[in-house]
Length: 198
Image (spheres, rainbow, N blue to C red):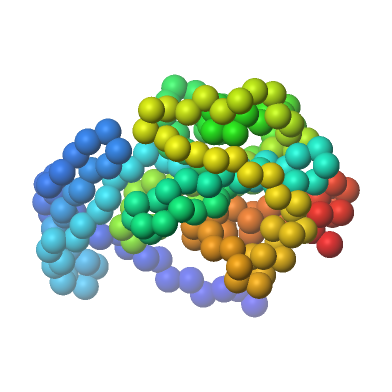
């Protein structure tokens, strides 16, 4: 049976103005007309560069995490290594640099997991997710002046147990990265991942 799909028509932008803009984000206020003729004003959109994040697994089955104070949450958060994709170069190249700079870990076995919108209603950027297998410590972290980051290596089964039990909280987009990891593991049947995800 064929699926009966209706086409969703994009909103018509009648006017746009920027209320704020710097290298990290821009706040754009649009006046838009919906397909039914209704006008919404202002409809705010936050423009940001794309983000990159990695699930980095060590040779002995640990996951590399970083601890950093996050002012929006007003607390220190332990999370996946991540960063802003600042060109030039491919997102994976940026993520390799971020992992090395934030944690001192590196590896050669990288796999794209996919990309998704960070928050499609209000943000215009995407999150590019990667898996790095068999990473190992090659250097000390090389942090920017504005960064205070503590790397952690946690056994992957313990990490998953803490997530399931609610003892570990993650950014929403990083939960999406873990879902992509599960899909990748099922598709590829990589034995290293099967042993960790069982």
